[in-house]
Amino acid sequence: MDEPTKVDLEALISDQVEENSALEYKAAEALGRTERKKRSITKHISALANAGGGRLIFGIKEFDEEDKKHLPEKLDPVDQTQFSREWMDQIASLVRPKIEGLKIHPVHIGPGLNDYCYVVDVPQGTTAHQASDQRYYKRRNFEAPPMEDYEIRDVMNRISHPVLSAEVRVNSTYPFEDSHIVVRVNNSSKVMARHYAVVVHFPLRISSSLIFPEDANLESDPEGKRLWLFNFSNSPGSPLFPDSTLIHKIKFEHIQFFDPDPGESISDIRITLYADNMEKRNLTKELAAAENGWT
Image (tube, helix red, strand yellow):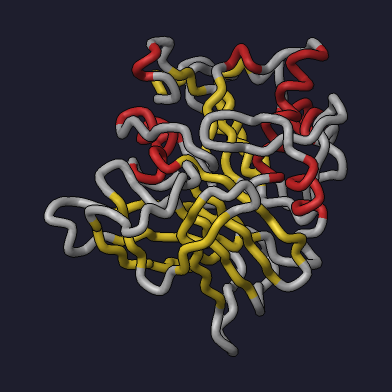
């Protein structure tokens, strides 16, 4: 990332750039010498490293109003005489193992001589990083929740195998001629996925109607509930490169009824991901959320 300036920080506020998975704002009061605040700082730094990396800014206050939450309200200077660059380095070093390539940029914002923001650029880690409370966290949208066991193992193995995830969207608008199930597969690791496969179990019905996807088979799960089964994989010589995305579309028709009635359908979307040495991943997506956009 480029060296940040006061102008850059002011632009985030004037443009109302919302927090996201790679950007987080913290007011000056987030810095402190209590153990609780030190733990919080290491939590948010390690969470970015365990996700895709990003920028953490101490010295920008968010709005208090619920409808403006996660939007920057104003510069909120940090007193550099109380919290120096060296102190920030010491706190960041409490993350274990050390995050290679982490950079802390002091940005003078005034009006006082010692009024600063600290911009912390956190690269994606090549292994899992632990906060000072000995827990592992991962940045997701606006939060930094504890990581699941499989997520910790995936991040620890970033160097040795790819890490794939999947998102689903249902495009279905009247008059329905161009209705698709769209599956987006992401390789968030630094390792190429030379071979991968995606298996999707999809409900028989979306909110508007019964559907009939192309190249799908009507199957049953172990409980006897019915589903559409389709899958796709890469062709030889077409790997999924690091930090890249694959989009796969499955066209479907809207139908009035089944004859004979197939019985009860599954209610959510189930996806299984395979890639090289990556442990098989099973993901579940809510249908309603997929119809509202990427989820």
